[in-house]
Each structure stands twice: as C-alpha cells, then as structure tokens.
Image (tube, rainbow, N blue to C red; front, side):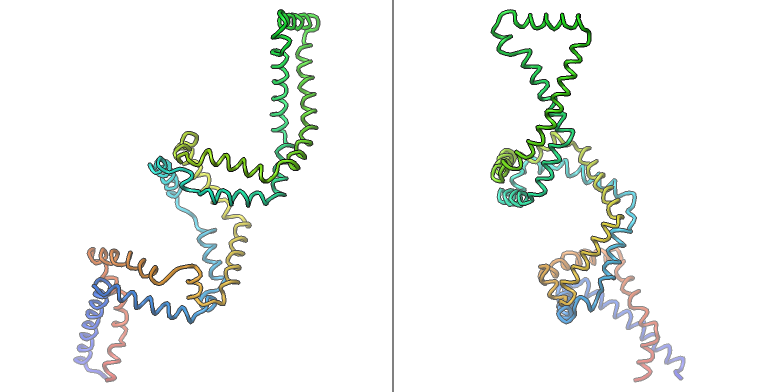
Length: 347
C-alpha cells in the first residue's frame, strides 16, 4: 500500500505532467510547427482513408437520418427570413451589376447548347403549344385583336378615305338605325364578338397543327439566338428597370417560404432518400480516398484550407486566454484518473 508521502509525490508528478502536456500541445497548436503537425495528421488520415471503404464507416441510414434532421426537421430561427431579405437587398444594389453584361455570365456556346437541348423535348413543346393556343387567354386575345381590327377597318378604309362624304353617310346610317331600333348597335356588336369567338376557337385548333408541323427546330433556334444577340451586351443592372430591390427581396422570401413547405412534403423526403441510396450504390464499396479523388478534393487543397483557418482561430483563442483552459479540460481527466499513479507504482 503506497504511503502518504508517495501518494503526494505521485499527485505532484501528475500535476507537473499535466502542466507539461498542456504546454506541449499549445506550442504545437500555436508555434511554427503547426503546418508540419497538420500535414502529418492529414497524411495519416489519408493513409487510413485508402484502407477504409465508405460502407465500413457509415451506413445509408446514418446519412439519411442526418440529412432529414437538417433538411427536413430543422426549425429555422426567426432571424433567417430577415437575413434572406438583407442579402437580397445587398445583391440587388451591388455595383458589379453595372459593369457586368449577360454575355459575361453566360457564353454564346452555353446558350446554343441549352437551346439545342430544350429543342429535343418535342413532346413537351407540343403540350405547351396545345395548352397555350387552346386556352381561354389566347382565345380572348385573338378575339379582341380581330374585333378591333374589323372595327378599325370599317371606320378607316379605302371607301371612307377616298369617297367624299362616305364616312359621314356611314355615321348617319348608324345613327338612323339606332333611332329606329334602339339597342340594335349593341346587339350587332355582341353578335360580331360571338361570331369572332367561335371562329377563333375553330381556327386555334388549326393554328396548333400549323405551328407543330411548320415551325422547325432551326427556326426556333434562330429566334432564340436572335433574342440573345439583342440582350447579351446589356448590363445586368438593366433588370433593375423592371425588378426593384423590394421585388427581389420579396422573391427571395417567397423562395424561402416555398422551400419551407417543399422540404416537409413526402416528395422531398423520398427524393432525398433516393439520392443517398444512389450515392451509396456508386461509392459504398469504394475506399474513402477514391471517393475524395472522384470529388476532386486534393491533399494540397485540404492542407491549404486547414492553414487558412487554423492559425488565426488558434491565435485568437490564445490571445483571449481561451485555448489553455480548453486544452487543460481535455487532458486533465487522464491525469486525474489515477493512471499516472498506477504506472509510477508499477515501476
């Protein structure tokens, strides 16, 4: 059984070892050797990553549970919508919009490639054309266009322009008819509108067939590229003429609220799970190092990011006297566990 003197000695030894260990770790974290230490740790981790498969360290269920926690179940704080609005205002008012054109953001090549890809969706295009020209909006637009065109022609045609008094005679005849049969003019107008409406309804079906069979991909492509040619040199700031700061802020908020609703639907959760399953089907049996390589993350990139953040953060913690207490709290349980005493006693 150890004597009190020996126990006191080991207690003092434990305290001294703890102080030395804390000092050593702090020097490693804040001294000139930090870069080398981080590189050693990173190389060890990468070496281990070459030996471990993804399915050895995590399961699809683990990833799904984490994804659902943050993408579905997480309750966003009340300050997030306000932050979204602040960001929207900052983006809208940024001066870079003045010196950036749409062509600086999207190249001609990508516009052409996107157009060509969209033109491949022939069945979708057919459905859009059918819905557009069969809908009530197009029928109303075409009816009004024809009606006012006919009305304008009757009021200003070759007969009324070239024959003196013809226009006056037409107005006189219209007035006499109204007196003889009040409301006849309105009835004729209503009848004309109904006739035009029926005519447009029948014609729109033929228009759909005409468009689908006579407007070629090349014609649509030419139209799209012509529009792009007119807007590519415009500055992005030109959008401010039509979209104000408040409009953009409200769009951001609407998008945020839409995501809030979407992420709680069964559809979103199912798609999330399906994406994770697909990821594991591809990489579950791959080593972690192969996964990292496929993503495109390299050792120099990881080390550079570690050195970008670690030194200033550790320096700030040390300056504010927060580093030493945290290191000590991490190491102290070992030296208070009695392990040091048992090791010393066994020697």
